[in-house]
Picture 1 (spheres, rainbow, N blue to C red):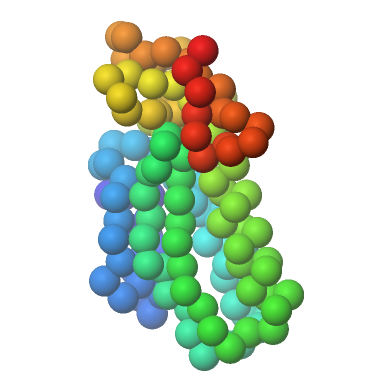
Picture 2: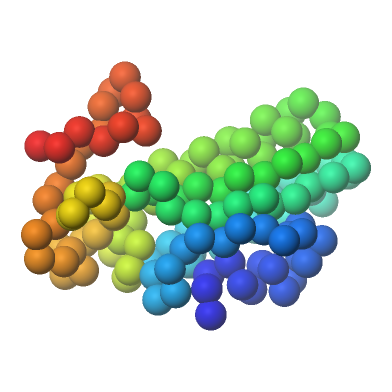
Length: 140
């Protein structure tokens, strides 16, 4: 069961045909996803609105991405929802996507991933992100 499956069951109204693109067996981000959606629950309970949908949950450039759409909430609630997702993304770059241990962003065969030493595959090399553009990792 994927880390996000429990949230799909708990809040089906949040997930209308979302694209879930996280590999099965990658349980290292489970707590990160749980923390993010628990924070979303809190915001939504305090600020009712017309609409909230998770559009996509995926790994991109080695980091977790949770894309959503929402309408009808005060600006501070909308900003808090985006902050929650940005925080989850930033934290995902330091947590092994396989086991949840402290980790680094790395590259193997043109594919980025966040792995600890124990979960890193042969040929995986650590990379750093650019301060100017954290979306674009730089090979060391």
